[in-house]
Length: 77
Image 1 (tube, rainbow, N blue to C red):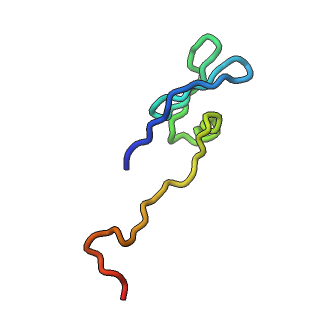
Image 2 (image 1 turned 135 degrees about the horizontal axis):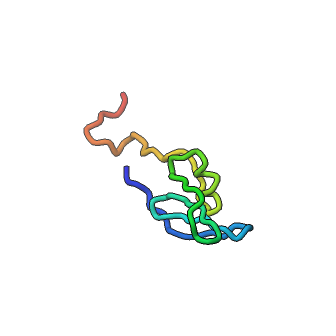
Image 3 (image 1 turned 90 degrees about the vertical axis):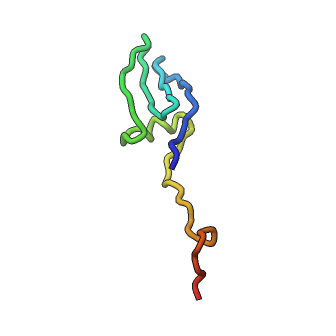
């Protein structure tokens, strides 16, 4: 399975701070001065709550179905 790549961007928060999304999926909370307050990786439990601000919805992974496209497989009788 290939790793997902995200489009880097920033979202302003109500208090003047920002959330920044990196291309690897890491989300950082930036303070007014530009310093990093907190960071969430895609594996962190709180990541999905911040990712929704970027329009990213977390759902179950898509699994390729096992069916007719599998070579050397005999169909059921």
